[in-house]
Amino acid sequence: MVRLIYAVNMSLDGYIADRDGNFDWGEPSLAVHQFFNDLLRSVGTHLYGRRMYETMTYWETAPTDASPAHDDFAEVWRDADKVVYSTTLEGVSSARTRLERHFDVAAVRTMKAAAHRDLMIGGAGLAAEAIRAGLVDDYHVMVVPVIVGGGTRALPEDARLDLDLVQERRFDSGTVHLHYRPRS
Figure (tube, rainbow, N blue to C red):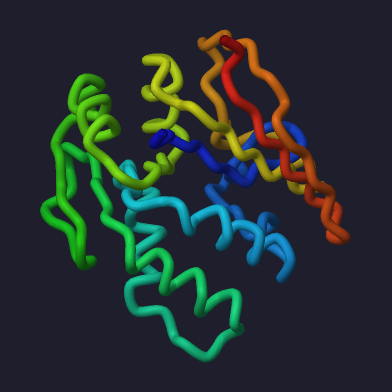
């Protein structure tokens, strides 16, 4: 069964970026990077908001000599389709990418039903819409051992959802992976 996955790096206090928009504190260790790469292998399509897409386009032309985990991520990312939801973006610059003006819950359900590989949603704002609509099947949360004190929240403040813990993993860096699914 194809699943819609929300995978997110967040601070211990629940932010994906600090008040200045920085997320350099979330730089993954080699083990975390490889774990995330392995998670991405099941993904056939990424759903992005504009800001997340603009961040991720780095991987379209990323240098191929940084590290094996870096190169692997770039390859896996380039091999997936991307859908960008934006009312302000003029066009897209990466291959296998299409632009949609509005996030349509019914269209995402149809896309999911027709897909042969998982979908992954990225960007807190877009993910919040999917969470509110009950579209997210899996939450993969990487809790980074830092408190940033404010910024962009990883999860919507106005959504209530009971979850079951599927898996957890602790990394030597102090990052903890938590995999949740909505309780049936």
